Length: 438
Ligand SMILES: Cc1cc2nc3c(=O)[nH]c(=O)nc-3n(C[C@H](O)[C@H](O)[C@H](O)COP(=O)(O)OP(=O)(O)OC[C@H]3O[C@@H](n4cnc5c(N)ncnc54)[C@H](O)[C@@H]3O)c2cc1C
Image (cartoon, rainbow, N blue to C red):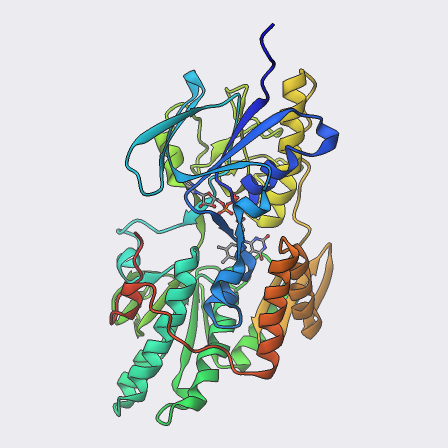
């Protein structure tokens, strides 16, 4: 009699969603005899909530990553680029990193967790973003923003032209929701904190502006917290231009929707995300109007018995019927249900719908201040900031990682932030140019 082989689950993307599914598939209570293979272009995933801190010097960049082999240690990792899906023959096509050969792997069950990309508007709506703006999405972005700020401080210190100095030290953030506000809050601390080391720069030479299309910043929060955050940021001299967008990004200025020319030399683009565009190459998959994988509430992809999707790349209706938002806290909880449903499908049992909604939103504003709306409890100030740190420290996987982050934070209490330019991204040190997106 032929030996029964384990169920083979291939997981595309080893981020928050894919990584946690891979882990949960081995949960004892599921009782699965399973072989899990993760395909990811990196051998780590980015712990996004700490990425902004890594980009603004309070955390060593590598400390906001989680090694996939360590995190999902019972799974196999293929470090490579997923290129195509042939659902009719249950095969995924991919290229291993550093090798152009297209390989294929067969699956019994497939999990799609390929995440999202920064939403770049079409050129006719806003031009120049790809060429000149920085993203906050990859590890290299965090390093590039820090390098850029250091370079501009050096250039500004060497100029005696006050107008040129103001332009060099004007940082514009497009998008005033959670990521944009976190970026501007931390960047202001980083850049103004560095000025004491420069004889020719005063803190007031540095300008920070957020441009947000909605009538208010942080539209995801209740009014009381919006008002508090707005006041605190404005007191620090951060410009909040709401009800406006940007229509052109240039190397040395932006043009806003009301035709104002704003001299600046750094534009950081945090105006939304979109599901991974590789999904459009997967001809057998139905996508929703946002480009996300169209799923049943059980995470099963519509029209497929053995394909599942979750996280930022999936459109899954939540308990209120609306698509679940693209958040790590959502992806992590979705993952448990996806693993359970894969086990149920394997045994021919009934599937359970996902019942995941947002628990809370925490936004650090820099200078030990933050806002928090957690299960309806609204908190502002130091306590909200401390809660933010405590919660994300507790969520960071692995004792060693936790310790590294804690040590970085502790060192920061007693010493200056790290103003070293790492120079890993060649374009970040090129004048008036955005980062390399290769
Ligand atoms: C700056 C920032 C701060 C954030 N802060 C918070 C926060 O405080 N709280 C919160 O809940 N959420 C936060 N989020 C959102 C959260 O990070 C995402 O919702 C979460 O990462 C989604 O998980 P995912 O697995 O779907 O995607 P990801 O974690 O992005 O994982 C996708 C994986 O797929 C891989 N991949 C993509 N394409 C390919 C390919 N073609 N081939 C191989 N591999 C591929 C990537 O390498 C990656 O590892 C933040 C996001 C950002 C950008």
